[in-house]
Amino acid sequence: MYNEFGAWLTAQLGVKAQKISLHAGFTCPNRDGRVGTGGCTYCNNQTFNPDYCAPSKSITQQLEEGKRFFARKYPHMKYLAYFQAYTNTYESLDCLRAKYEEALSVSDVVGIIIGTRPDCVSEALLDYLSELNRSTFLLVEYGIESIYDKTLSRINRGHTYAQTVDALMRTAKHDIRTGAHLILGLPGESREDILNEAQVLSSLPLTTLKLHQLQLIKGTRMAEEYMERPADFHLFTPDEYIDLVIDFVERLHPDMVLERFVSQSPSSLLAVPGWGLKNYEFVAKVRHRMTTRGTHQGRLYLPHFPLSS
Image 1 (cartoon, rainbow, N blue to C red):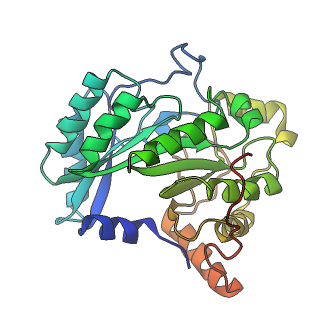
Image 2: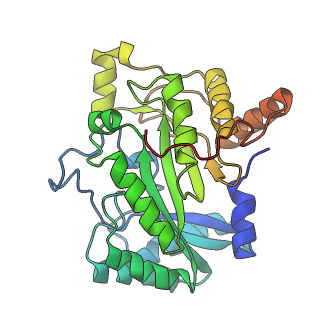
C-alpha cells in the first residue's frame, strides 16, 4: 500500500526505536539576521516540543527524561535522539560534534536524527557525518516545506529550491540517509502545484518524507495573514486532505518511506483548522480509503521527472 516509516526503521535497526525530541539551543539563519529575521511565518516551536524538551536542560537530561516518559509504556524500547527544534546544524562543527556525541553516549540511544535547513550543511559537517554514519544510525531531515521559490519567499524561509536540491545531492553523495518535511496547503499553492511536488521530490535522493497539513498557529505572522487575506488560503477538511494525501502518495517514488501525513498542534495554540483527529486515526482513514480505491504508493509515479519546479 505504502512504505511505512515504523516498519522501515525497525528493519534498519533490527530493534524497535522511539524518537526523543531534543532542543539543543540552536537558532535559525532567518531568525538571527544572517538571511532574515522573524523566522518562518508559520513557525512556533512550542507546537511540537514536549515538556522535557528545553534548552535549559542538557542533551543527556532531556534524553533521560524522554526515556522515562516512554518507558512506562514501552519498557524494552531503544531510542533515537531527534535534534528537532530550529536548525540543528547551525553552529560550529566542534559544538555540533559535542552535542551529537553526547546524545549517542546515553544508554539505549541507537542513533540520531538531525533536523536542519538546506542552506546550513557544510562539506566539513558532511564529512564528519559520513564518519558518524558508519558507526550508528543517522538520518538528516531537511525542512523543504515547498519546491516553489515564490512560496519559500512568502513564508520567509530564506533559502531557495536550488539550495534544497544541492543539499540533498551532497548529502546523498556521502551515503547519508536523507529525509524531508513538506507542508501541504501553503498559501498560493493549488492542488495541481501540490501534486507536482510529489513528482519533483521523487526525482531527488530522498530516503524518507514527512507530510504536514498546513495549520495556523496563534500569534504567528501566517495566522495574521490569514485573518487579513483568507482568500489566499485553502484549509482542507479531513476528507479533502485524505484524498489529497492519497493522490500525492500515488505519484511518489515507490521506494520512498513515508513517516507521517499530519501534524498535531496543541489545541491551545491552534487557530485553524481543528480536526480533532489523532495521527493513528488519520492513518487508519488513509489506509481504508486506499484499499477502497484499490491504489498504492507509486501507482502514478513517472520516472525521469525533471528536477525543476
